[in-house]
Structure formats: structure tokens, C-alpha cells
Amino acid sequence: MTFAEIKNKLEEELSTVDVLALEPHFKRQALFMVHKDMDVVELGARVATDDKEFIQTALSAQKLLKVSDEKMQDLLKDKQKQYLFVIVQPFVFAQEILN
Image (cartoon, rainbow, N blue to C red; front, side, top):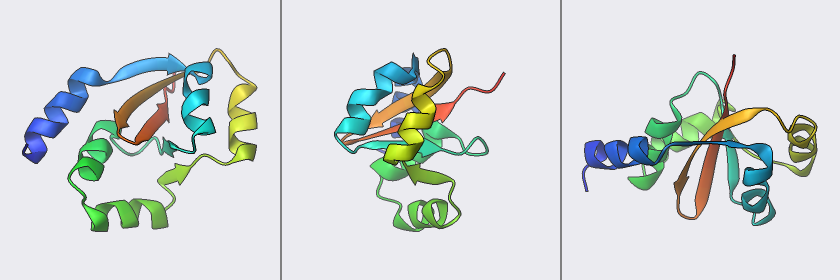
């Protein structure tokens, strides 16, 4: 699949969930939070196409963070908050929906 095809597929699969739906992915250490300035679908497509430079830049800039135990505890404090998420096996990328 091309980058554009993968991106289109992920756009179709993009979902909205609450933090409780993300918890199982955290427990298997596959949950990453995506900074509000990034496009979660594009990030997923970059991961799916193994764009190492893009991923490393996002990690270095802390625009992509693996969810720590402390962060998950913070997220669980507000169960009403909603998140966009995409799955690129074995990873799940979530982004808080800001009102």
C-alpha cells in the first residue's frame, strides 16, 4: 500500500473513545499520546510506512510519548474526556480532543 492509501484507510478507521477504552492498550504497553499539534492519522501512516526519521523527530520533540504509569493515572482522573485514536498494530495512538 502507498502512504496515501494507508492514510485514507486510517482516516476511515479513526475513532473517538474515552480513557477507559484506552486502558487495555496501556496495560499491554502499546499506548502512545500524540501532541495536539500533530495529525494523529498522518502519524499512524508514518509509523505504518516505517518513516523512522519522522518518528524519531516526533519522539525527540516530545510530540509522541509512550504513556507512563503516572500519565495513565492522570488520564483516568477525567473519564469524560474524549480521544481520537488509530491503531497501527501493535501500537495505539491517541490524541485528546480539545473543546
